[in-house]
Amino acid sequence: MEKRRLGISSGLAAYTLWGLLGIFWELLSVVPALDTLAYRIVFSLLTICIVLTVQRDWVTIWWTTKQLIKNRKIFWIILSSYLISINWFIYIYMVTHHEATEASLGYYIMPLMNVVIALMFLHEKLSRSKAIALLLVIIGVVILTIQTGSLPLNTLLMAASFCLYGLIKKQVQLPATISLTLETIFVAPVAIIYLMVSPHVMTQDGLGVTTLLILSGIITVIPLLLFAVATKNTDFITLGFIQYLNPTIQLLMAIFVMNESFSWHKAVVFLFIWLGILVFILGNMHGLQRVKRTK
Image (cartoon, rainbow, N blue to C red; front, side, top):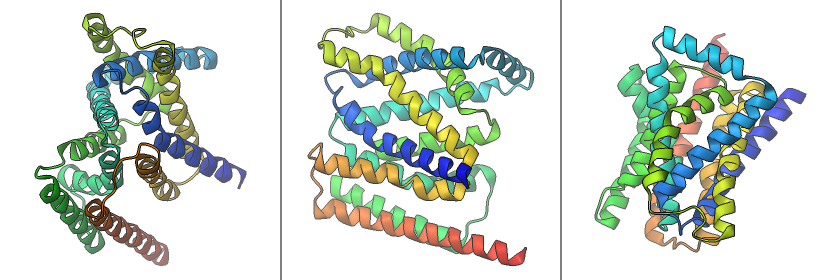
């Protein structure tokens, strides 16, 4: 029982922090999004290196890397590192360009995007509830496309990149700290080279912005460590419910803190997405109960 409480509280803390991150990135809107991403990668690596040194886990990193090379799975880790970087960049770009509402929409549709990924790559069957949920989401996206006059590519790409990232993570399962270390190691050289040629200087926007850029590594690592604790101490069904805390907080922050408009046009889009999520959750609960009855 104590472990479950620890898992749920860690999950709540992780998703709450992820939900509040939009405010953090919005404070860095004076910095180009690509530069912010590069600083985030570099300082995340420095932060995780400190964590590994304290935990004395460098031997584990070395052994894991050798095994991944031997099993020819290192390519998947490299690919996952660039997929999560793409996801980070799109999210940072959207938040710093007054599209935090659309960013929250992307996180709402991620679980249903996972269904599409599973259909395409894992050949899983599509249940009636999932089909209805996907149809509702598609209707919502179509309405948003008609309203804006263009397909919400940033929203869809952000969701798709994270879903593909998750697909790879299922194929090569690693502890959170080790996974983050390897992923940041593979993208850090690109980030460093970019910062060397970028016209932006880290200190040019004042002490406050410089401090926030340095802290970007810490605020990236802490939720991931909390999530690692959550996954070890609670079930994924519970985490599946908790995950909607993230986009909900993002949406509330976008409306009430970042002062983004939330007209009835957007409300209609979100209504279809929320209905899709509701059908998806109820379908999963019904499926779980049916499995329990057959045991």
